[in-house]
Length: 68
Image 1 (cartoon, one colour):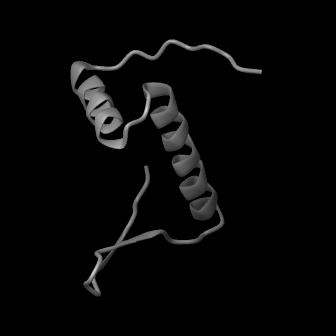
Image 2 (cartoon, helix red, strand yellow):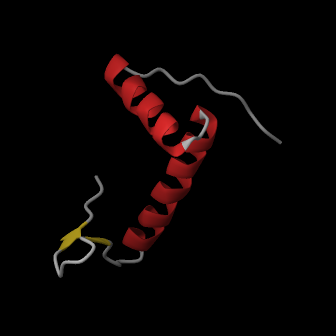
Image 3 (cartoon, rainbow, N blue to C red):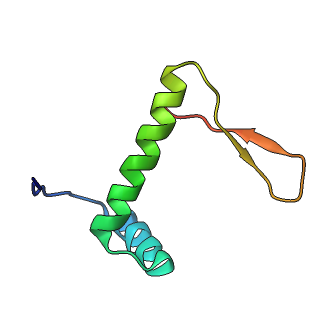
C-alpha cells in the first residue's frame, strides 16, 4: 500500500532536490525513497554502536560520518 504526503521545502532545499534528481536521473519520489533507505541504513549501524566512514578514493584519508 502506498500513501501520499505533502512535503514543504525551502527554495534552497527544493533546488538541491531538483539538482540531485537531474544529476541522478531520478524522480523526486525515487530520490526521497533512496535517501530514506540510506538514512535508515546509517542510523541502524550507528544505533548498534558502529562507526560509518567516508573514504576519499585513491587516498588513505577517511572521515567519520556524523549524524545528528
